[in-house]
Length: 238
Ligand SMILES: [Zn+2]
Image 1 (tube, rainbow, N blue to C red):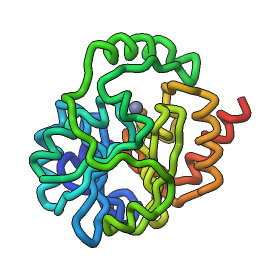
Image 2 (image 1 turned 180 degrees about the vertical axis):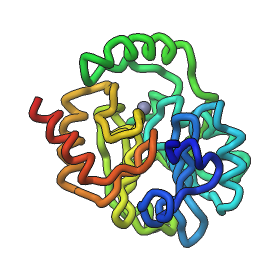
Image 3 (image 1 turned 90 degrees about the horizontal axis):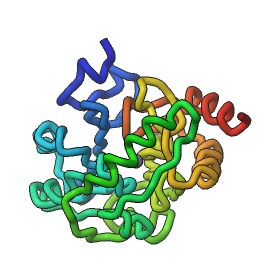
């Protein structure tokens, strides 16, 4: 049984997956993370409507004061409004994804085999949009200054390509990378879709340069950089 199936509501820690202090909730295809802070905790992404109740229940054990949306795709920000209210939390999103919130933009397949899925996604994506939410803090710069102010040790890293505002959080040895990389299909893989494929490739190179120990992706379980590196290098050389 895949760990994702086994662990539905509880954060999986070192014992289960060997990924140290990464606190996450992997359920029905989306993975939500919690990063602990000095003045409250940060939830990373919120999932679609079908995980709302489970994620809310799980997150209640933390002191969620901030919700960081890695990028404004519906499967990451659908519950932003609801969780913002439920936890009294401030919502953070990259300035470059503000216009995307309720405005679908066409994605391109990153490999030929994803072309049909991408076509379907562009149809459903243009029909659905997340409940409107207010962004309390628009992320304008990379680095740690804003996070320091909020009580977190870490830095924002911009990884445009999947969307223009795709943003990761580098915290210790983990890069919480949203859809800049994925484990959607149960193993390390290039995200199947991107708004700008060239930009995404540059961001993959940036991930190689940062070379964290773990990539905590928006879909699937955290991936070891060693596994991701092979997939990224192969893709960039194709
Ligand atoms: Zn996405």
